[in-house]
Image (cartoon, rainbow, N blue to C red):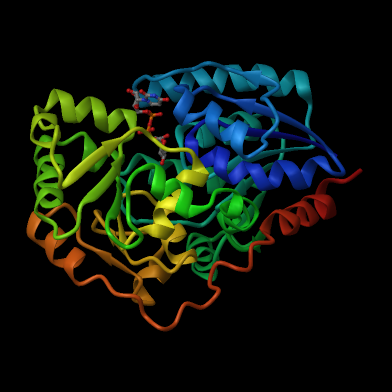
Length: 357
Ligand code: UD1
């Protein structure tokens, strides 16, 4: 079986790591990097630490407005798929790279397998929601992480080619989380276990609005525990251009750090008293490791984490963030709603059943 896998942004490298490994033990995989993320600490570092093979092709699309970025990738991916003639194209998640690759393949009648199918925030102003809905509707194989995702697809009339395979990010956690000793990572940063909160912010709705980002910054400065904030490049640019960075420079309440490698992020997460985030994937990672989460959004795709009491949705309201952070707790019950970390093997079996020979 010949598989073309398309990645381009940080969360996709993290999801691809276990599947690349599983696929390459028996099949031919061609890895394509769109170049949507290009900074060393947003891209190369994950290939190195997670042992992902170097991409066979890098489209170097770079940053741009959504239509142009997606369109440029679409054209380049079409040329490449015509040349490579794969049996199936694998796409991950909900980025502009995901949509471009799924559309390029579907138009050429090349089967599309979507890892992390069926997720919905029901907020169409979110670029990721548009990407995931459209990708699901042109996919042939819908690899859902949860029962909730399967139900979302059924509600949109998609019932063929749907498989509940569990969450691939749990495979990554199982395979790589132990690679770094949390004590070493915390020690190097002068942090005490449980003595700080970890934060990440990068969604357009939060980081592109001076009011909302300003409200988040104010809340972080008021919290009882210090915040270690791993700043996405987009958010750093906006903190600077909105004049918010001055209030954080030299602050003992908030410490800004560069985007971190995966294993350092997980070590810091495990050592933290809690997570503050607008990331999708990190809400789940907090759940995997039993760390309470406050989500800086009004909705989530990972509703199980909220229903089970491990995650609270507060949006970007300053007072709500402060209150939720002070009330963080660890419920007794943490069932395996995301599977057991063997999703990559399950995906390979599904693809073999459908596309071998
Ligand atoms: C993208 C995805 C989002 C995913 C996130 C993970 C879309 C619509 N969004 O958001 O679903 O959760 O990646 O990080 O595809 N930039 C850099 N260096 C980089 C990458 C980006 O400086 O290596 C800056 C650029 O100014 C760029 C901005 O960040 O314009 C946004 O980058 P982009 O790739 O469009 O989206 P993300 O915000 O990273």
